[in-house]
Length: 216
Image (cartoon, rainbow, N blue to C red; front, side, top):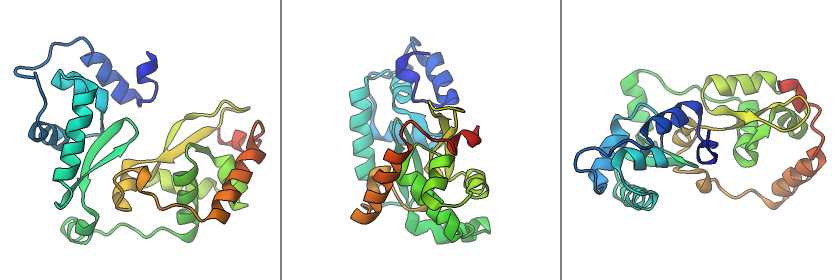
């Protein structure tokens, strides 16, 4: 695997590998906003920017420009463009959540206080091990981490280069959609006291994350 695909999940990396070197489709000399919207609409998963470029036969700068245009075009509509690092996806607008929940006959289950607390740690500190989550919370967090994984609000992002190779966790597109965010940059800033506490915990965990080794 090349360095360019190290930040993609296996499915995205495999798809990109199949596309690299392939001839562009008919008329793929440029990429319009309408074409990009249609591609993301029919995609069954988030698409990597480089994957879009390979499919359309355009360069990365063109993809980024069209993504910016599409984000502006969708700003006051019922669909949003959300991004998570390299990947992008279309999701429903948060203000339509109630109507959509009634249509599908369900409403997302409310998160417990422990779930919200853990999710906030992952969102602001990601990628993070379960050991560091437990260091910050002060209690065992195995069950709540598993619950967040089950709800697809967090996902495994590889393993840490520390003893035991504990799993690293980060947020998902479902997290962004549920909380009405278009990217992690939309997260509200932490209060200075909280930010200082997280920095202190990071420094305490540097080179020594014995609790995290239990994640493996």
